[in-house]
Length: 357
Ligand code: COI
Image 1 (spheres, rainbow, N blue to C red):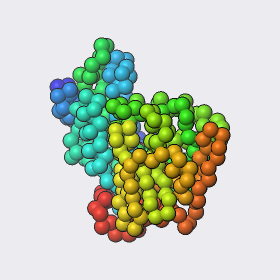
Image 2 (image 1 turned 120 degrees about the horizontal axis):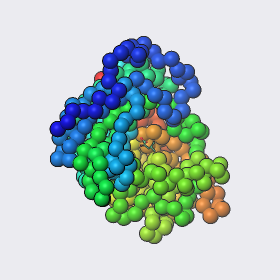
Image 3 (image 1 turned 90 degrees about the vertical axis):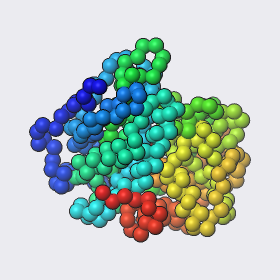
């Protein structure tokens, strides 16, 4: 097989030393791309051999106009975060990276793609984070968001799996996902656009799941909403998820979230929150959650790698506005505090979720 694509080979010292702090105002971080120094690139064959992975300078990649990803959307992405333990000299921690590797593997099967092994995935993520160490924000200022991609890079014309694949990992420092910061968000419940269908790809991180919700998202933003919450496409009455995150409702001591039945993305933060909520004494239910229960909830919150735990202040549906409890005395706040304390190393991680690198 041909050698790995050396797209932006590391042949000069134009990147800062990995120990030198990046010149960036850490207080200004949102969730936009801040190009970092290096990315990881590895080439794969259709029969599943991934070879010659290497770090390159972060930069453009070369793709055939007839690549599988550009023509038929054969691609997956992942998202995970690296946190700095203390000051700029502190160790760096990854949160449950093997879960991302496993999820990419599952998604690859659905998309007829080969995937790197868990070890190859973890190696690539660690190399990318360490090479971009100076871009990991100081404690409390954000995290380094790591974006692995698996794409059909080889040429196709008729509809078929691509003959070659590319696995890439790049990273960007990020702050809060929503412009509201940690303040409550407001959602528009979509009545016409659906995110996923039974038998489709809603349960994997296919790149093709995300562009189709942009229209609903742009409409909601133009009306002053933060994001969109979707209903199931068959009964049009059960909650699915928001454009970029899973959803939970709280009623008394019971926390409910839609079960992952193939149309819901099995979020790693979702799964972590379910476990932490159980530990904190809540009764957690994964099941169908109807829109009527949503309107009757005490609290609503969203979870995701990018979003972490975002409290929902209000939801609008068919010109009705429903408001929910937010603030320090909420389940969402307790869960946010518990999760981020583990992610940032403020408490001992008894679950083996964090990996110091
Ligand atoms: C994440 O939370 O990591 C995601 O992949 C969602 C994305 C739309 C930012």
